[in-house]
Length: 463
Image (cartoon, rainbow, N blue to C red; front, side):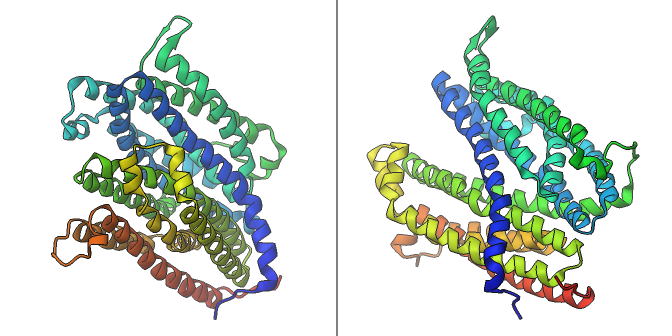
């Protein structure tokens, strides 16, 4: 039986929006970093832009996988917060910090030895050198980035995302002048081109960490957690618990990133017009994706807190309220995207042939919003229940198998019977849409079964 009550919906939506609003603003601020880097480097030189594209693809793949592991702290600390076990939250933060140290060493080793990855592209030595320098610089900021992810997970778990959002917005305000200084030079500093973006990012990463630590140290809200009350050596049992949940989450993120990366690589075979059109639509899809992502993070927080408080029925109610609201909202966004597709496309001001190519792709970006909303909401609800292994397998089978595999078969008409409309880039987007639909169905089924099992094994508490 689905525990979805309309009488609860208004209150649940208000609670979700209260948390999701700041998270969305912060996510958009971080996306703007990439926009600024691309736009400003493009004005410097084409070689620097190419180097930035290569290095960013490598860094994002490494960073997303590593930070996904750390994000396991959020549902664990959320359950402890709901159970009012505040001392345990402090210990979990300390152990997550040890885990972050280990992951930083792994990530740093990859970034500092990325030659074999860069050689795959077979670009000129100059471009490869700039990309390598970019990655080496970002390795300096990786300790701050990983520590910041621990603090972000903590703030999401205790319903305080506003703190992180404020810090991110301040960082965004610094990004433009720092980019100008290190890309183009000034005040006696020689311009570095694309690698200058990395210098600006590293400075902001450390700034973020210092400011956020200041909040945690001096704000009385954090005192019950006793994060800095004493030193803790690594507790391998707690770290293993984090890894058991975090590793599948990190791998799920990696599956999502690589599915789109390989999709772009395959579409590149269709020519520059096809790739340009795909990139525009994919970029727009990324911005829209921030809406269900922010709501899903908020949902995970509220569900995990309810589970921790032993309010299992309430946790399921919140989950289904979020599924209903997030999907309804994203369907509305999808309809609006289709109606205003020409206007949205004009914002990118592409060549006419790219516009003509891109228009049909808007059908897919509008259509798959319902599936995207369903799958991401269900995935984050399951993380609140500390379920991540099966969702990882679902993502691998759907996004890699159906999405990429099916997209390849349709896009290149491998079997010779693909309708003309589903050939080319349309085929890859259709495959992606089908993969999200399959993932949504399986994840929602898993949520329903998990919630039912929790209610049987954990006696409910009336609220």
